[in-house]
Length: 64
Ligand code: FES
Image 1 (tube, rainbow, N blue to C red):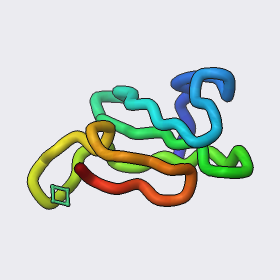
Image 2: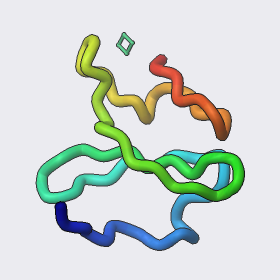
Image 3: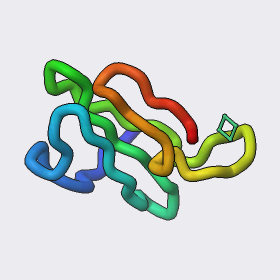
Image 4: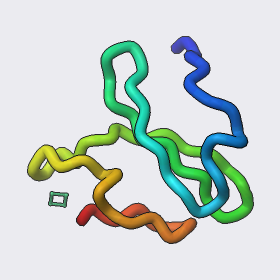
């Protein structure tokens, strides 16, 4: 596994999410309560909807 820098910690605030394209893949970064940043596949596998259209409350990422 390799790492690719896509932003800085100042680009995704606690409780927020931000979509990025990384090496041709759509990725959604979220900054959870407490400041931990996590990356998810940005497209919901159920119906190919962007997860960035959903909600993130700092704990749960919910598809629209
Ligand atoms: S489109 Fe159904 S859960 Fe995301």
